Image (cartoon, rainbow, N blue to C red; front, side, top):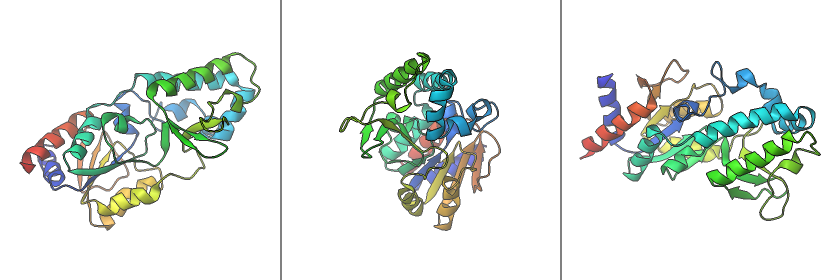
Amino acid sequence: MIADLEQAAELVARGDVVAFTGAGISAESGIPTFRDPGGLWDRYDPMRFGTFDGIAREAMEHPDELADYLTEMKGAFSQAHPNPAHTALAELEREGLAIGVVTQNVDGLHREAGSENVVEVHGSNRRLRCMSNGHLEELTREQYLANMDRTIQGLRTGFVVSYQSLMPKCGVCGSPARPDVVAFGEAVKDFGQAERLAEQAKLMLVVGTSGEVYPAAGLPAYARGCGAVVVEVARGPTFVEADVRIEGQAGRILPEIARMALAARG
């Protein structure tokens, strides 16, 4: 493992690093994964709770079950803060070695950690999208949690006129606004921007993703096809084809890679 760390750090020190992250990096911040055994989709049917239409239907037919699901989500996100893996990637960007992060996560932790060039291909729950005019509104952690609280309390009343009646309102026109996240069956966001970053990368640093969810899962192979080396940090087997693979916790490994890379840069 030491040799792999040294090799990864040497590659990072060359610069033009793009990080590609998935649920595994945020699991170390306490956010439950969706697809792993025991994850949310093991306990909640994604066809019921993973689409906007499904959630709207559950609000009318099974409001208590939807409230339970949202309560679990709120509990996880309310306690989650950037971990050392997030802050290591932000440090690499500040020091000029990383040029961006492409993430499948919707938790906003990369931005909270200080990363600035972040492409959120599955959207973000720290942002609202007006269902009428498409206006986007950024949210603080406190605003996001307050919106969740109001929706959960409305569901617990036992009388729901419609799910839209429980949603936050657009700050421009007052129409219902939904979280700006990609649900099942919806197109990913800003994928052209993600591909452009992959084209610029000398190194793609893949962290905490199974490599199963397309089209995002194709980015490491796309980066390699454009000339990048692929380094993976993961806790177990994945479908990612990496040139260098380091197994273990990202929160321990990435800070060490960053430290060694910055030292090697001089």
